[in-house]
Length: 103
Image 1 (cartoon, rainbow, N blue to C red):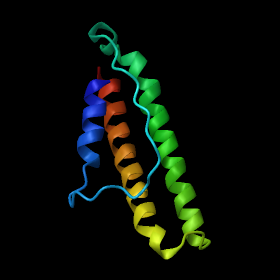
Image 2: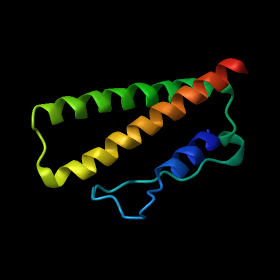
Image 3: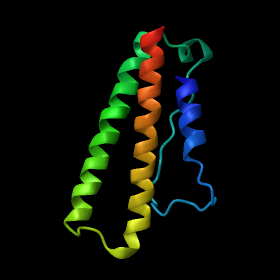
């Protein structure tokens, strides 16, 4: 699990180092004890699958709303960043699912 989260964090660091424009508060949960962080591959698969499906759904929603003109011009860069992040999650999830299948 830690490996996937580290990969996701690394992929989402923006090249231009600009902060995201979304101002929603994020509540972080305390880290689990080291013994709890080690998960068997079977326990990891549902998380990867959920990330894959929810990211694909987000991409579809963004594409539909953009086609219908549902975003203002100043929102498009943030929406584009969100879509790019979802595409990266899909790629990471597919890679991880292949790795889990090989184990």
